[in-house]
Figure 1 (cartoon, rainbow, N blue to C red):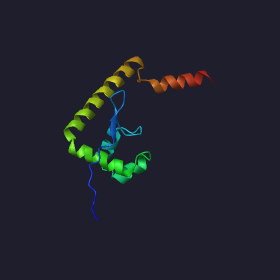
Figure 2 (figure 1 turned 45 degrees about the horizontal axis):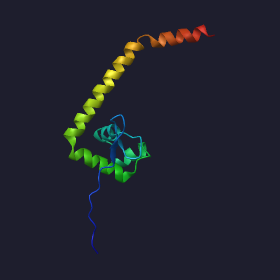
Figure 3 (figure 1 turned 180 degrees about the vertical axis):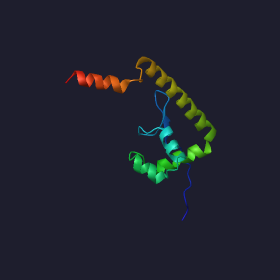
Length: 110
C-alpha cells in the first residue's frame, strides 16, 4: 500500500474588506490564532466555533506557525484599524456617562 502524500493549502481566504477568514465560514484568522495563543487546543477551538472543521483548524494553526511574522504583522494592522474605529466611535458617541444618560431616559419614560 502506498501512502498518498499531498500538500493541503491553508483553508483561508481574504474577503472584500481585507479580512482573512477560515474558508467557507465567518470565523476570522484573528479568532483562531488568538484562541491558540491563549492556550486553546484545536479541539477546544472547534467546540467554541462549530462552523469550523477540526482538520481546517489544524491547517490554520500550521499556517500560523509557518508564517508567524506575516500573521503578527497582519494582526497588528487589524488591531491598529480597530483602535482607530473605536476612537472615531467614541468621538461621535461619548461613552463617558452613558449609564447615567440611559438611566435618566428610563426614568423619564416611567
